[in-house]
Length: 281
Image (cartoon, rainbow, N blue to C red):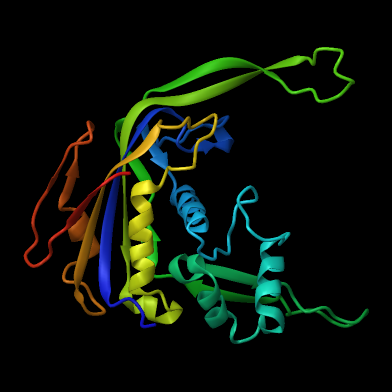
């Protein structure tokens, strides 16, 4: 299968209502905000949701979440060794890993191998191990709200005791729950044909991501994100003419989209590049 033949840019407009889209563990799990009060959803969080949706669509994923994994691997290294066998760590690692896992050929991956074991008393100076970097063609930016967000914090009680025979009531503890009242966020991404040649990322792979983005928050409900509290409003998809270099820079393409805090948006036309507008699921 040939690699990606078109540069692709995309943007996702999403709506949050009474949910914590991405808690910050260094700030009491409050919704992430920048210094100006604008809400943020990190690119790592967005990629995690993409990977989960890809797993549900039966794509092979290397970085799986523990509650959704579809194999018995105990770690990423264990998964790599079981899938690649004695070729893991060899010069073929990058090629085989890209062929095996969708997220590796899309987002890239760093395989960090520890230094080789030495006999007791043997000098280990200078042997720091081997790192095998794979640079992926798909880049995704963090999502930011279009206006500063209002964060509501509620004090709650939690029954967390699991001891005893059930005849005594467990002691309650106090806790906090945080949410964004309502906000519209937007994030941008791009797919690079030159980097796609290195990993084998194909047009079919790009279509798989295009299919999943409008459904990004399906099957993602939790106490912090109740069902229906987060939704994709619109996916804007720019597919350039065939070639290793797009018709315009990603910055110029992304700049044609102007989103307002209420979720409405305007698109400026670029000659020869027509965006596709897709409703959220």
